[in-house]
Image 1 (cartoon, rainbow, N blue to C red):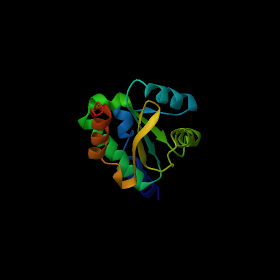
Image 2 (image 1 turned 90 degrees about the vertical axis):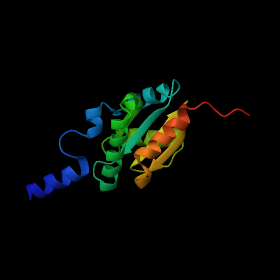
Image 3 (image 1 turned 135 degrees about the horizontal axis):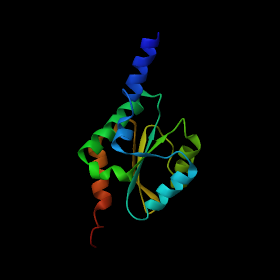
Length: 143
C-alpha cells in the first residue's frame, strides 16, 4: 500500500523537490506575498502559476512550466507558484483582484497589475508561455 501511495505522489509531484522549486520559482504563501508580486508587475511582466498538488492534469501543467523555465532560465525570477489547496486565500485573492475565474491548473501573465493572458488545463504549454511572454515584452504596435 505504501508503495502505491508513494507512486501516486510521484505521478502528481515528481520525485524529490518540485521541479519549479529546484529552478528557483518563488511560492506565494501569504496575501502579502501576492501583493508584492502584484506590485512587481508594475515594473514588468510576472507569471502566476496556480497548481493543485492532487491533480494529474495540474502535474502535467507543472512539468510544462518547468520545461519552459529550463529553456528560458533568465525568466525564473518572473514566475510565482501558488499551491491552490494549501494557499486557498492567496488563490482566491488572485482570482478576485485580477477578475479572472479561478481554474487549476492555471497560468496568468500579469503586467501593470492587470491580467494580460491566461491559460488553464491542457493549454498550459511551454510554447504558449513563450508566446505570451514575447507579446508582453514587445512594444505596442504603432498606429
